[in-house]
Length: 103
Ligand code: FES
Image (cartoon, rainbow, N blue to C red; front, side, top):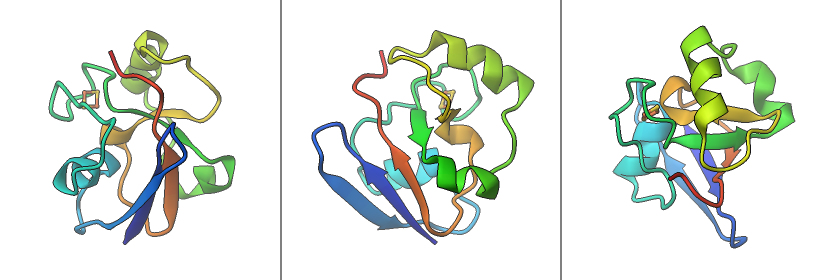
């Protein structure tokens, strides 16, 4: 399962995610910058915000009610591809964009 994280400065990191990891966990496990994940993956903090490429949308489960509410509280602007990375399974080939800020 390869995941790619694009950083606001134009750099990117491609990591190998463990099965069962979320996009948030895989970022923390591989020292990817810009994912804070204060609440540890409980959909309570919105500091694991990412932007998903529209092409990858179909690979992911729909936005949950909790997630939807929290996405209105992200530090960086909410856009159409906004998701909480702790709610996203590490799907092979997924690319996400890390926002400018999380807090
Ligand atoms: Fe807190 Fe995702 S880690 S909402």
